[in-house]
Amino acid sequence: MGDLRRKLDALYDEFNRADSAHDPVHLVRPYPDPADREVAGFLAAGLAFGRVASLMASIRYALDRMQPGPAAFVRRFHPARDAAALETFTHRWIRGVDLAALLWILRAMLETSGSLEQFFLAGLDPSAADVREALESFSSRARQIDLRPVYGRRPRSPRVTFFFPRPSTGSACKRLNLFLRWMVRRDAIDLGVWSRVPASQLVIPLDTHVVRVGRCLGLTRYKSPGWRMAADITASLREIDPADQVRYDFALCHVGMHGLCGFGRRGGDQKCPLRGICRPGRLRASQA
Image (cartoon, rainbow, N blue to C red):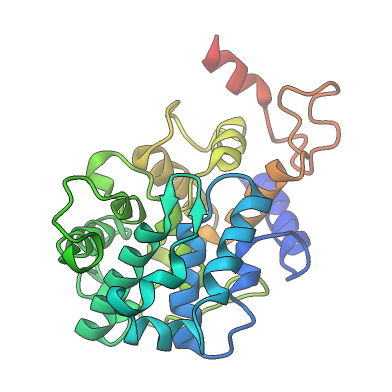
């Protein structure tokens, strides 16, 4: 475990720079107001799926239309007046009306609690091992908000619920955990906007790259992505850093995104910064 910590700490130090990688969090950082960072961060994390160039363009498009700033725009947002500005928005299967529904939900959260942090805290048990139940509460309450002002009826399966997954369904809640990482942690990458959620309760945002590296490192016993795998990788990292286990996420993710992971490549892990402790054979054996 000592060798693993040294490698991960070195990797963290290497990537802990705002210019170390192209990432959607950098579209949130220019907002100096914490209220704007909170709203812009939720939007950016929620749209962080698909090709990087495409998702970055979609986030910019949405944020450019939220003037004079994301928080003020959401607080006064009304579909009858403001949804038209979003009509041409498209990101994968998300359309302008779904983005309008998301802003309507965020407005309800701000009206109810004053901030997204306060809305989240209503479901957080300070003694809980992680944020599982808080995420369950957060998404369940969000899903109860009346969307008829946006969709004109009560939709059976509105696409906006994509932004509010629940651990109880097995979802890894990747984008919500990414948002929490940005809001709770503070370093050269993460923004540290929130002050009342402990970093020790965070769960790693489980994307394709973290799944692959996590399995090669033996950080999880599970083969299929989902909440159990996310919690398992988090628990393994907690043994290395009990107070801030998710700090390794950005680096682990971008090892894969930058093509540094040796799995399935000629030469194996010769260029991987985790070589010597990463065992791609674990992953190959599990897939056999």
